[in-house]
Image (cartoon, rainbow, N blue to C red):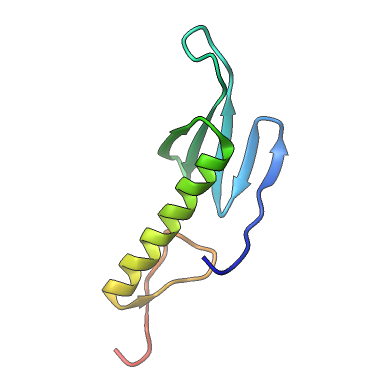
Length: 91
């Protein structure tokens, strides 16, 4: 992950990071602490107990995607996790 990425705070409950939404969930009687839910395009990627953990989860998803695109022989489209459809030149 060579490029620096920024967390954009939409409001006090929602942030955007690398195309993913991080939603701060409220406390409840069962969950005494806030939780952070990670989603993208309606897909659920889990909950974390800190925003930093949610960011690490997203960075891990990006890294895994880059590895699989490399194995498949396609280039990674910068800034887009779900699209690795452009073949590398020379294949």
